[in-house]
Amino acid sequence: MGQIETHRADGCVTLTLRNDGKRNALDLPMWRALTAALHELVASSQTDIVVIRGADGHFCAGADISEFETERGTPEAAKAYEAVNTQTYDAIRALKVPTIAVIEGVCFGGGLAIATACDVRIAASDARFAAPPAKLGLAYPPHAAADLATLVGPGMAKWMLFTGDPIDAARAHQAGLVEMLFDAAAFEEQLTTCLEGIARRARLSQIAGKSAVDAALGRRTEAQAHVDVDACFASEDYREGRAAFLKKRKPVFTGR
Image (cartoon, rainbow, N blue to C red):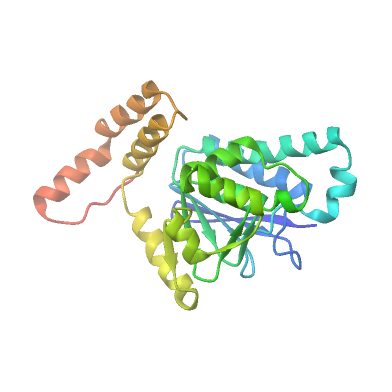
């Protein structure tokens, strides 16, 4: 049985998918544990960034196929299993703070859906991506397909779903599936620098920016976006940002 590992440091929460020997494929308890961990973060006010990554050089190979006969053996069971998956993707989308998928190795199936539900994807140059349901006779969840199409366009999304074939990190970056691509040999160093840079920025500004983009995509209302914008302008961080600019020093943001 796999597990979800949680690590907190300087306002960043990292959720690590671990299923040794299975390239971090998610079994049913892992899906539920990941959703529970995400729900806790949705309710928390102490988180600046949420990072989802996999252990031991792979992101996630998708759902654990060894469970398919027992957990997805009938149409009814398959629908119930997909509902559990969908709860995970919905929990990622519900987070107001930045969510970042950190991807090495394989990012297939349900793993790809987790990554596309996040705000940003950072990948190593050796990563590979695939939506393989057509090779298994399955259907990709509609909202996950919509996330994929939003990033890569409808034609590329359909090509990935029609073929199930993997694409490499360079192609994924070119298609818009990956926002940042780092060399695998220096991945952790470049990743740390990138995440530290994001963590230093004003959290309420990031929330307002995310909310505005999501409103443009129809995932939030304009009223919700304006609430987040107003909170930003009323914040201590806004005053700190102005003062730092005038004094020509780096701002120190607190998320308040």
